[in-house]
Length: 354
Ligand code: GN1
Ligand code: MG
Image 1 (cartoon, rainbow, N blue to C red):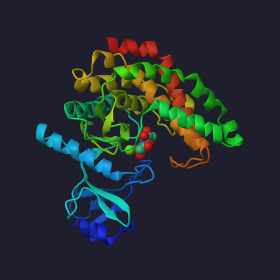
Image 2: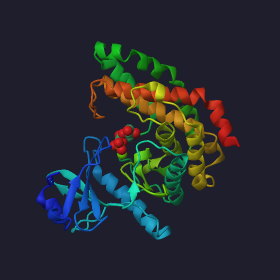
Image 3: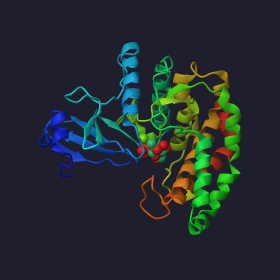
Image 4: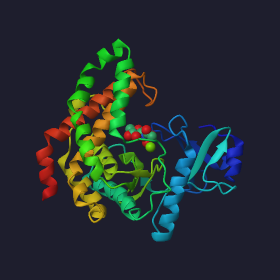
């Protein structure tokens, strides 16, 4: 790709555009991500990201949350690979150019980010990486952290957003989304259950976007290397992280699959995900939290279904689409996964009680 960045940006990072080949890996929905591959240094390079300020209205909160975590980890767990932004020549973690926020991150060679998993060991390793981050951050004081997106994983708020979108949507969209709207009602009891559970859940620093493409595995051995995309590292509940793993590790297809028959839970991937996560978190989670392992999946997958459906009813302004009703298909895909979690509940429970 031809150099799309302003020269002042290169200058502030002390980099020469002539030294790099630029390409866009492109699976993220929100930020723009570019890989700068060094032309002569094999495996050398950086990742450059432009922050979406429609979504992250106060990028400085991301900066300060990541910095708090980075300093804590450097002090208490030196050696842990934490992919924080690299400072620019003014020692800032972000670079502001014409009101746009940019950040430069290290490129981690010999690793791969997956969209779907093909082997249970990958699920184990990925879940272990996110569990490890939570375990290492378990003792960090929370007071100075802020929400980079307020109420991001608050199902009550997501449900309200959906109800409002439904109320305001054009009749034609409501008609198209009839089946999905029914599903939203069918599973609304997940929200009722959450309201009962919430007071028992401790606040922890969570990643909040543990989808499979946000962890890097060794490209040869599939050993977990590190997690990436720390924009939503902020106080929350463990169900956010474990739930989003279930959402993206268990099926052989992802949220974009329009053939919903293919949305099926692979039991061995479920088992591996829990084992990987608990290999780090078993001593951190409370007994009450451990009662909610399966609930985490229902909670997050249902919320993601509502989010896609809400966006569809509002004209798909949030999640980029490749065709007109893609967000409706994504919602139906995710509702199908919620259905699977309920249908296979007994089987899945038996797997982790062993
Ligand atoms: C968004 O930007 P990306 O692809 O990492 C979204 C997540 C959703 C995900 C669904 C800030 O993540 O919450 O789970 O899409 N991030 C934000 O693919 O809304
Ligand atoms: Mg993200």
